Length: 114
Image (cartoon, rainbow, N blue to C red; front, side):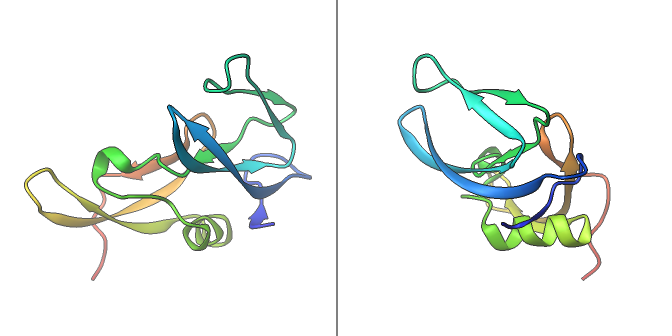
């Protein structure tokens, strides 16, 4: 258990390994969420809560993976700071908050205090 689900009363967030497009990743999901798949690759959430965070959700922003420590901080404090990288190599830090539909949301317009 990594923490309490931010969107349902009795759920806890747990880590689980999955394969997406042949690449291993983790999914951090509410204990009230279940996944259904027909082809072994495309997962659909079913259950009373659909909250989940894919470990590779920030890859397009230059972050390899979201780790358990970051998920714990997100659930405990309501946000975590992600170190992201632009295509030209610029490193920047942004707050990441929970989002009911997408799991997480990056606050690009908010500056992180040094």
